[in-house]
Length: 365
Image (cartoon, rainbow, N blue to C red; front, side, top):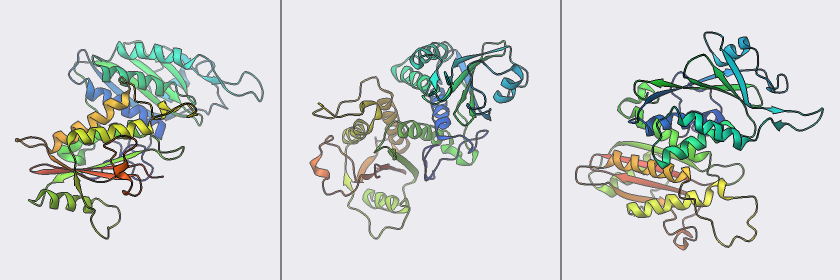
């Protein structure tokens, strides 16, 4: 499996499966990733459902504010509908109350998000905490600070939503009943790892949109996997670390063993120290890093990422051996053992009996 990154990665953007291909913006990619991951997480639920995402364009907000919905003909064109919709309504829009006044939302975003959670939950069989957290996160993405949102009816049971950004770029999301839940699309050239690669890219996309090193740099994750090669675990790990570097290194690092529990602790610490939701703009009065709430989506995302890589490399006799180099704060946010590890970049290598996976953790500026 070649390098797998996020759909919004600035340097190594993951190819998006057809029909979206490479046209989604970073904000749209987060919505798409949430929808596709929901399909994976609810695959065995009933009733079944399918999600469809389509990219389009509309007049910019300055040209056509959505205080009222566009005409049926315009809505059909914007959403890519084959026939004119029966009706459309503005769930939330940004409008100017007067000349040279700042834009204001037509409804409180939290109120609209609650409505969307109910609409989505009626159509998607969510039964566990991670699914509920993901539905709530998707509703938040759809009611973001710079978006307009239409609800469109075509006369059936489908839920059609059209999201528009300030520049007029749109994303139509359709959630419709289906006999069984339709899996996310894949890139056919990815072969046996195609479904895994789509799921990893969704997890990475959603993590990187919530975890930030600073105002400009998200935490990034990249994954590789393939045949083990060398019989010796350390030699196999060193070979895979070397071949996955962007620039040929002068020498391989000193890889150190870690346990699955330490890996979990290290990833949790990265989430805890980078999660934008925990920072309210001021550290005044805060004596230590706050913990991530138990129900927060990022807990489920990083855990699923690790579980997938552990499962991908496990053998009949048990889990893979784990080795790491660089930054992995297994002892919490004040990990003194990492003082000599240089910048905030780490790599974990999963060495199984037949396959190896590599996970890069990049917190550099």
